[in-house]
Length: 496
Image (cartoon, helix red, strand yellow):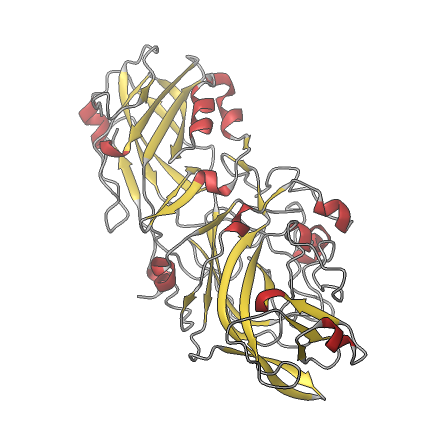
């Protein structure tokens, strides 16, 4: 089935009814409730608004693999000054069916009145829910739009093939007039006191796949004496995601602004950047092997459904008030943009001019001028050149999650921006390893440059587009709406 037909039609009809106390862990009991209301919660199809800040090349949707553990509904009556809410546990409803529907058997007590605002939180983080439940009616809208200081792993997780992700209203524009005296059954039937609320996942999601190769691995080339020559073979690949946000807005901003200090932060000094605490790098402790997968733009749901992990990030955007990537470019630097880090183990074909005797990746030194491997730095430098140490035969690559474009010209040195937006899946597919990577990732504060090595081309103060890259990649960017990139990076115009 083509991905653009995989629309998530998931209406969770929470026809909302009284349950026993084990099924209702937390219920408002001090309000003069005099009716019942039902809320249908509809899972996201992805963004349907303007492209800013970067929902590029949309191509359908992906259903996802969500687990629903809790559903919390708030009815805010500012006239009466009350907030009615209920938190329904997993035992109170069935799993989502194949059509994306969570079958209803719940009901919510409500206080009658007009223009009652409806807010929904799926899989809510305990601290955030506690704050909302303690917020009075007059302050609730502000609290629901406020920032939460959490990292991605606190609001999204993967286990047993399912993703448990916090979701909230996509906008604060859901109102209901609650008529008095509506029974539980009428509320469930939707004939009275009913409203539908669309929700979105608060995180973005990242996935890397690699093109299948021979048992020997992927070739790595370099020019030796002016001739393109294979110098190594990549034998193993792992990846993680870094430079995520540490905060998010409980409900997204209409213009996709993300919380400060990340939103406004632009690194101008590498030493200052290395000591900042704005970003979450905890994802770099979780390196996993990507799926080997023959790239097929119509079937990206296959690796998404089959991968044995999930990697989540909190959105990072900058300068959303500016209309074009060219205008936003000065706000996007390598040190403030979320990325994939790829770690590739490699085996050199020759070391010190002969086939190596070791059989597993080992520390070697690459000559900066002759592109040959040496067993020691001294042997490499004896050839009148600097040398880069690759510890344990590992090289690294950095790719942006959501580049605006990969077709670069002098006028448009793409990529210029790479915003990450909630409820999107960013997928990079590596088809080739054209060049050696770098020995360390200086966009990880815990992986600084070795002063004995030549300068690393990755500088946190640089714009996203520079003159050097290392991979040939096909990128499919999917929100739980789908976007597509496919490209091959070679020396010259299209390089990062």
